[in-house]
Every structure is written in structure tokens, then in C-alpha cells.
Length: 236
Image (tube, rainbow, N blue to C red):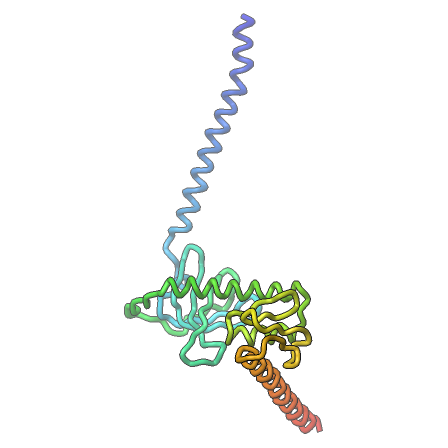
């Protein structure tokens, strides 16, 4: 009799635990089935965008985007748009990834009924090399900021790096081709190295960089003066 009571005492918790585990597994399966059903459900009106259609929307930051649909993933609600180039170059386009959960006023300007043209082939080696170069450039910029390099020094480094890739930081100095060192405040007179074509070329780049900066500043001052005159004329 005592053995029976002991068996019953230990069996009831085990059975209850097994029942809870079974119910939990059933609930989990139901949740998964419901989740998959929601994800695989057919999109309703205005929830799907055909490739080639033109769409406009407003982001959560208040920015209006408008462009051609390049790709659309319905389950994740991610929309890829090809928009007008922010650089102003007509042969380029901005490609923007849009999370529809963070936009409003989505409007289909024009829908595309015919089959879109096939996608252009991608040069993966070129993409990998470009990504590596972009990463290295960002690391160089991050190093310059952490080292306390002035804005003028960072701008000069970027200007040189566009022409000469063999360009790196040595503390706060700019090292070009391991032959020329440019120290703060990064003027033409601060370019030091063995006299020759390399030093002469670097000096020309530095001189042109600061000449372009002065030209940009004069244009900005002129535009500000014109705007001030217009404001004064309107106020009077």
C-alpha cells in the first residue's frame, strides 16, 4: 500500500508535466501554422507592386520618394525603387530600399501590365572589389576622426585619395606613396619629401584642392549676398 501511494505521488506531477509539454507543443504548432498562413496569404488591393510600376510614398522622416519598382518582397514588405540621381548625373540612378512599415501615402502613379525586361547581368567581382574599397575608405575616415584630424585635413586626404590610392594616415600626417608626408596644417609648404616628380605632383594636388575650396567659398558668399538683397527688397 505504501509503495502504491509513492508511485501515485510521483506519477501525477510527471503526467501533468507531460500534458503541459504536449499542450505547449500543440500551441506552438498552431502559432507557426497561423504565422505561415498570414505570410503566405494572397496580397490584398494596394499591397502588391509590379516590377516596372512607378510608386510614390512619404517616409517617417517626411521625405517623399518617387521611382520605378525594381523589386518587391511581399512577406517582408520591402520595396526597392530606382529614383532620380541625387548626384544630378543623367546616366546614374539612386536605388532605395523602402520598408513599407515606415512609410505613408503609398500611391501607384502608373502600373505596368506587360512583362518587365530581364535584369542586367551583375559583375560580382566588380561589386566585391567596390565593397572592399568602400570599406577601406570608411575605415580611413574613421581613423582620421578618432585621431583628431581637422576637417581640412580630412578633406585634403579625400581629395588626394581620389587621384592617388596609395595614400594613408600616419598619426595626423598624410603619407602619399611612402615618399611624401603632409603634416598639419596641410598646406603646400607642409608637403615634405625627396625632390622629384612625386613631390611636385602632390604639391599640385594640394594647391588645386585649396584653390577649389576658395572658389567654392566665393560662390557661396556671392549666393548669400544675392539672397540677402532679395530678402531686403521683399521686406521693403
